[in-house]
Amino acid sequence: MSTTQRKRAVRKAPGERASEISEAARNIALEQGLGSITLRNVAARVGVASGLVAHYQPNVEELVASTFTGIVAAETAEVQAAVDRIPSAPGQLAYLLDTLLDGSRLDVTAIWVDAWTMGRRNEALAECVRDQMDAWQAMLQGVVEAGVAAHDFETSDAASVAWQILGMIDGLNAQALVRWDGVKERGVHIARAVEGMVGAARGSLQQQGSSPG
Image 1 (cartoon, one colour):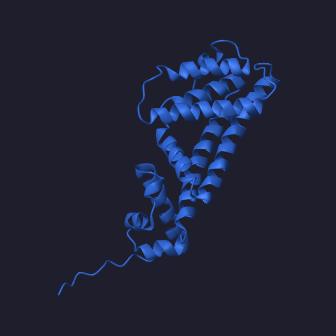
Image 2: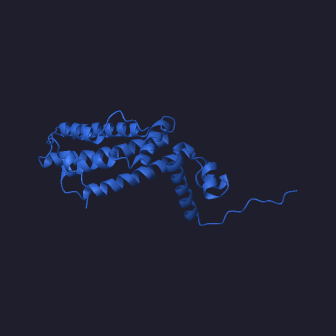
């Protein structure tokens, strides 16, 4: 008869255990995708029984949704802080185009693509996706409006322009996930397109894209 027994999990304070579970879900999402967040996978990552994870996170769909929000909102806050350090609207917009299209954020892009697909059947996730898309549009709209106020940009519908820019960025980054090379220098092409949309001087959004200090 086997004497092997399951190793008992170390008892931890509820807050510490909840944070540990959330961090495990985050790491699984970034490494394997949102669809890999299951009670079993999270439990294995933490080293506890699935029932313990279920005690803290009884609804896997909500765990997926909160994991998505945590990852995406952190990126949004990071980018917003960087944008706020740039003194001009053209510089801010150029920085946004550069940092979102330089390929360094494809891990988060993959989370977005997962969420758009899974959100069709997970309403909790879909609601979070809509909220985070609103946050990105608000950031872009604020930059465009600031440019209009400073007479650097010219448009009568900053909200629509922000929506269009966001859609182009999302589409190009989704294409980058499969390493499609159909369009070379996509950053240059989108900068030219956005210059026309906001009425900026030709080349201004390509020349301003230095990192914030």
